[in-house]
Length: 304
Image (cartoon, rainbow, N blue to C red):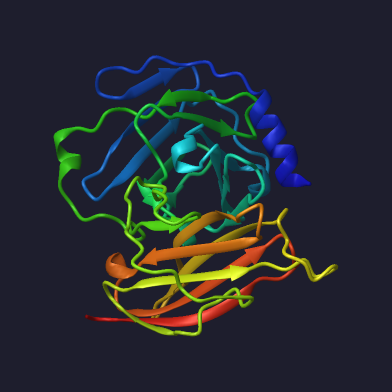
């Protein structure tokens, strides 16, 4: 219910643009905001509030909220939102159909947030690519809220063009493409991978193979059954998630996609290009609206 309430508020919000200077700095009565691209493929946002802005009364109210109004149907991202405070953080992404809204920690997404003086300053670095799709794009609109100050955004700014420094550097984790849906369909980042042959069709959501070499495809087709009738669940929706399991530290999301089944047969299929995945251990997670729990498979990616 909380996710739906936030979506409804997002649909109703009006966007008031603040003009930025040539150096991508916004100045208002609330303070200043600087935004720009880093060489490693991250969008950097720095905020410094003015001395007149009231301080939060307690740590729980010292929460920053960053909302991006993406409305990019080609990437299946309607919007996303960051919550960051001394007490908690989370990242919420909303697809175009609003059916698979999910929340993650900032670490899961690769977002770096730092607030040494959370009532006055904020520094956030957001990866350009996450979940195998562009997370931020030039021209998308960001709203910045400090909820202890007011309900309306303190800053609203469009993501600027890239400068020369952003042309170099490594791409962040999770830039591989995935084809989800009909055979030969373009991925969310516009890359088409040929499917040489259809994998065997069955009722298990997960493949039987657990070890894949870089360059192989993790692909599977399955008929999703309605647990009440035993017939194909032609009405259902599904998501596919791939998490990297490092030797140390938290797991990292490298793929998050919404799957659309064939409405006439209830057949779902997915294909993940493993050439962009580093060797190591991963967990493949499939969730469908036909069942309340997900199904998981631990897999290994090996060097070719």
